[in-house]
Length: 79
Image 1 (cartoon, rainbow, N blue to C red):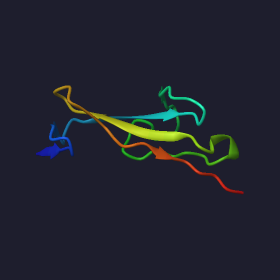
Image 2: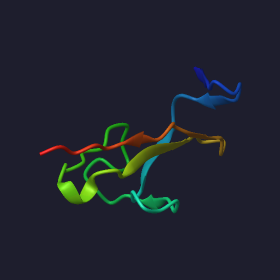
Image 3: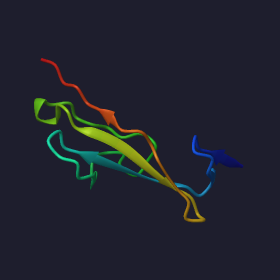
């Protein structure tokens, strides 16, 4: 079974890995997340004011080395 991305690349659905990354609000540097779920399809992020503006994305790789990176989502924290 294959997954086709919006840019037309194909990925094997089985044997895939996930790695979440984050980027601080005032930065453009992506870092590997160590939060709960960081190597699954769902990450758990504690929403504190210090995280306001952080961006998160997921890098998915298949057994053949194909990589697909999700669009970034920005965390907005209101109090």
